[in-house]
Amino acid sequence: MNKKHRKHRKHKRKDRVPMNKGTKTLLIIVSVIVGIALVLGAAVLILNALGRSQLTDDGLGMNAIDGAELLDEGRVRYKGQLYQYKKDITTILLMGVDQPEKGMEAAEYEEGVQADMDVLLVLDPMEKKITMISLSRDTMCQIDIVDASGNVTGTAKAQLALSYAYGDGADLSCQLTKNAVSRVFYGLPISAYGSIYMDGIAELVDEVGGVTVTALETFNQFTEGQTVTLTRDNTNLYVRYRDHSTAEGNNQRMERQKQVLLGMARGLLSKVRQSPASILDVYRAVQRNVTTDLNTASMVYLARTAAGMSLNNDVIKVQGEAVLGADGEHAEFTVDETALYELILSVFYEPIDG
Image (tube, rainbow, N blue to C red; front, side, top):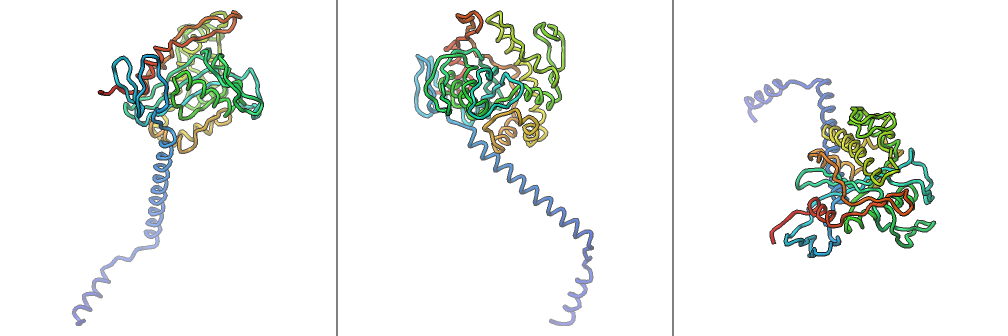
């Protein structure tokens, strides 16, 4: 190498600006932050993928009403129209328990602990919408009977609310209720469940900043037509009241439950749209009064999916007839099977050519 080239190389080295200690430290910090963000982002994507695989079903194995023809691959023909079970649809059973706090011991039977609210939460990625379907707690259906060890020994026709009572007040109760609801819905696959005791509902209302409703009836401290904001202190008074003198008492209560349910759903959607991970904070706040088989992956998937969806502004009520039973005290609700099947087709299936 000649002297001219050596001089040129020395000159270039002199032109470099040395990196000071502060700049190096800043670059290291930025690199670490970027690295953490990438790891967290990858973790969220992995959890999302796991949640999706856990919570979606193909609808195979569902039954059909008389006059409907079951075909292969989740298809059914009804009144000349061909329907296909929707891809990636998720169905979760939500239960409201009629006791203040969760606290029963495992495998302990207590007749008083019943599920007063049974709602199917349906997430439809194809139409990007969330639908809620409520089923009366007085619905007469086949419920599982279990022995002291929690083993199913048979079934009996009874009110849906009693299916929760035959369990342990936690997972077994949820599973028994899930089985009963699935039977009512012609074998509908229910991906997951979650039950919440009354104090948990009050805590959840607080977590979403309160729920404002217009009172539908005059009772306790409420006056029909009055606008009131429900909080931890008065939510249970509003959703638990039931007029036992009429067969319509539970239907009236379901209308009030619908108001609160929609208000909480809107509040939760607002939170997860800002940050899907906030669903985990909400869950931790009410966890002591909740039983669910949803894990972290499932919750992340649900939050991310729901954040991009619109909420149906009504809770669809399964149609039927309510009458007082032979004892004149307990209501019995009989589902309109044709109306229910057509509801199932409209929510869970899509019409296709064929």
